[in-house]
Length: 153
Image (tube, rainbow, N blue to C red; front, side, top):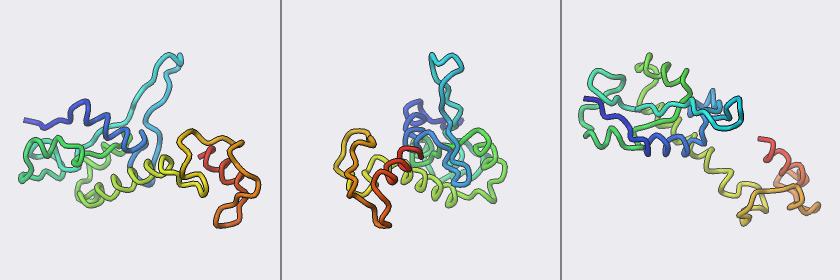
């Protein structure tokens, strides 16, 4: 019997990764608008770090079914990398996948944590008009340029 993720766990993994592939060499978007613009499509995959069933990649028999289904045992990946990590479990270790997951979650957290100098207290989306011309970051980059780069990335 497989210990598959619940719909809620899948949604949690996707959102925690910012809907981007957690492979640090990929980071491609896994969600976008449909051609008609009337909906969206999610192509990402909630992959198990340790397999959902015996015989699967990186299976850990010491985990309970609940632990296998828990978000801590999942990682959000694009379709290509979800297949890749399961095809080469010797290379893509539990430790590597957990490192990818932590990194992806940290990157997803930063934009919401006020990482732009002088803007940490803002609770609304940044706009170019938010900037005082005198404001600079640690590298003496004018604030407008810091905001422009943040909004473009």
